[in-house]
Amino acid sequence: MSTRTTSRIVGVLATVIVAAACAAEPVAVRPATPAAPASATVAFGGSGVATVGATESDIRAAEPTAAPAQASGPCSFIATTGTTQGGRPAGYLLGRDHRLIGFSPPAGTRTDRGVGVGDTLGRIRAAYPGTHLSWVYGHQGTEWVAVVSQPGADEAAIGFAFDGSNPVDHPDDLAEAIDIASGSREFASGFELCNE
Image 1 (tube, rainbow, N blue to C red):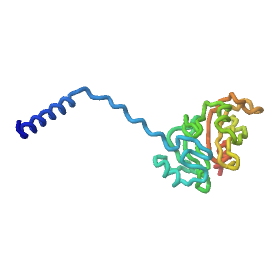
Image 2: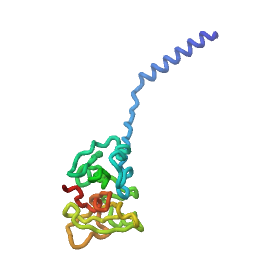
Image 3: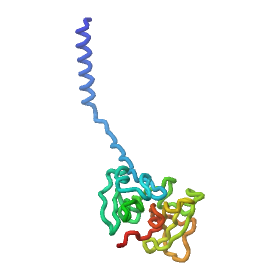
Image 4: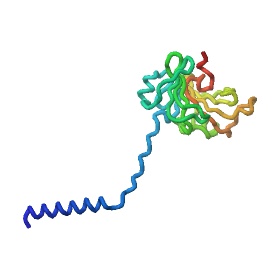
């Protein structure tokens, strides 16, 4: 068989294979899982990408899809995707000096140590051995907040909110967290920081 005939046969076979492949049942392609937002982790003093003192530029570099900053009294707020467990917009709060003072994560976000809303105080304590835990009552008016900070770095904290129906005694180790926030100690405690 000549080289020319062989080339023709190979060309015809290739055309038949391509035609058969195109006529076959379409293959179901599963859509790609969207990447988790950069802020998808809570860490001491902020998110997995920005902590207390970060500027708006720092946050934008880490989360380019975040909404533009909106005025919130003398502060500003950069919304991210979703809402908090309590139904408030998730995002970053910048103080009067235009630096990060706190992060309110989207519902379902966990800390870099794997705990979050729905976990018991006992599990949270176990995830943060050797840290300082203090209590504040009145977060959003009706909640206890367990404020966790690292020794020597008390300004960067994570606040785990618990039911406050008993204003006398803070929750025991079986109580489950109902919300979470991270940032400065005051922000993590639930204090209002942006009054005029």
